[in-house]
Image (cartoon, rainbow, N blue to C red; front, side):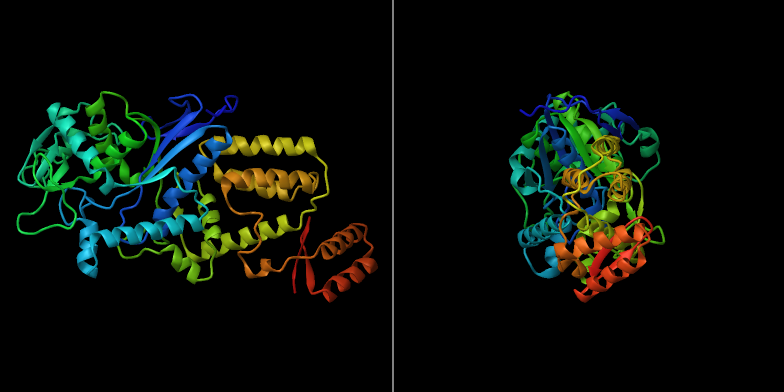
Length: 473
């Protein structure tokens, strides 16, 4: 077990309490996190991918604080219907029918595509990826537990959870259950209340599904909400520290997870619920597959953008704030990201000064990240640090390496932009340093001579108010 940093307070905004809370793990030194993964019937769009950046930031911060983290991301490869009201087609089966491929081929293809995307975004793989289809026995067992506690009822199309029997249903979303059910049309035939949800859906009598299993209630497939809870129980236990997802999961998916989990065990399911806000377009419309307006990470790459620049863009906004996306915004973020890395590339590794000031930057950076993952503030401090002439290059680089291990922007990798592929020779950097000193001393003749010598070697110095950068001509 790791020795966690108990002197540093980490605060997280808990959706359940609607407030920031000091983080205290269930087991000292250990943290168990579950992140709702994608339904693998299509590529993840860039709005989806934003939802995996903040759990990655959280996990790396916890690890840096000394915690041992067990993290699960699932793949929903069966059971997610086109309507949250337990109606419509299974998304994976529907995609299979439209393409002529099997549901198994579809889910595997898009799961692998998702893995490639998050790898490009420097999102670390979880301890384990779990696939809903690999946990069918556990899901059947969970339905049986709920049935034994008289929390279920059967209809013509499945086994349903009776939300009226769970006294605190909707507590995560602050739902008015009576108001929700009163006068509302119940979409699935035989459902008693609008808020009730399917635990096990029966296969249609007039067709054979590709993904279906025998169960005590008949051949069929699990409900979407059931899957996550069963996988959490199997991999992390009945009570976990942190559950993450998008804000769209709050009113239905995560509310249903709580209801079935706590009814089954009688224990608190999750201590901290963290939800990321939507990425929206210029018109403030949410990006989504159903709207047909989604952009994939590959689209950004094809347009000449770096995946790491997109990560930089996501970190410029707090995870609980809307992120308005446009190509202009991404271009601006990439320019800033590019400039930051060039400034870092020009740091003098042998220059050492300002150790006390560097220690203050260390404290402020850690405080920012431990304040509910305030990445925008941390980025601002990174810029301040890099341009602070009172701190030596050696101290700057040590801090940058340390915090880039959390922010994961590859700040020391100078190969992802064409202009950065050419390494500036040490002798050119030294000439540029000498030139800068002559400029500060107003020795213009020597400054111009060194500028010409640098130019003859194929480089140019770009001067700013308080610093400079060396780039290929």
